[in-house]
Length: 421
Image (cartoon, rainbow, N blue to C red):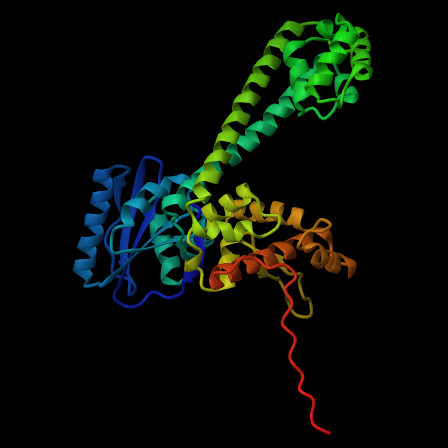
């Protein structure tokens, strides 16, 4: 689960039990230790209620045995596999943290000078990282924020699927009718879909009367296409250099791809309707939507990624969550360039990126800022990253002060009192 908060666990106090888990798809490995090194043997438990209760029983037993008054549970970022355990522990008196798998890999080689990986070794290494104070707490969205995160994740998967299907459609069309793409564009348009669904092969298009075909595509494209494009398509179809063997199989595949595209698009529309309805129940969504350039999908995605904005006391915590905090590699007289760490939530960065791409356009709220940066020689990508950081600072300030966005704010002028002559 990738849900890191910017504020980490900087120190583990005396009297704290460190419980760690090496997460697996079927079996997990647990381990308990204290700050001063007292521990119990590693143990196995499954991904079931009985398994989770066994883990908690072992943790409570170790806490009582070592006289600890606090429990910190840590695990690696392991995609979805840790989420059921984290949700089970949310109602328990335990602080949940997580560690970067990169840190685990590096520290395990320091411990025994070996890159070896075993289920018994990993939870001990995770415990060492937590003991050093290098773990980050976990963001677990609840209620509508959790629902928005799931909706946004589902939409992202289907956006990727949609792009893949469009590419497959273009590839099939190129095989049988390579001239098609040069005569009518864009390939993702609904008029193209209509033509390929009704007249899939070049033979079908070549046999059409240009007047009838032209009227069909004129209506479908709302006047953008007409008799001229129809004549070009019919003529090109009659003399196409596309392959002639196995065309029926390609046509069958093409119709199936178009049907899949329609299903994906309907599902994405359904997701966006759900996003709108959910945002209406979240008070802070109206503030985010007041920012020119932030749409429903962007706001829903951002709330789903962040969860409760009030838990982030400083801007740096929010920057770390997004992986937009800066670092540099310098040595001696050499001063390295500043870069973003990219150690946070990648989807959050993607949402912010597409938002600022709209905001830096002419009449956008970030246009002047972006032009000022690029005007003094800053690379465009670096300027966009700077705009992403600025947008995140604006959002943090709005949520902290409970205020809507105010564009081009001007401070009130001071009243000047003239001295008597």
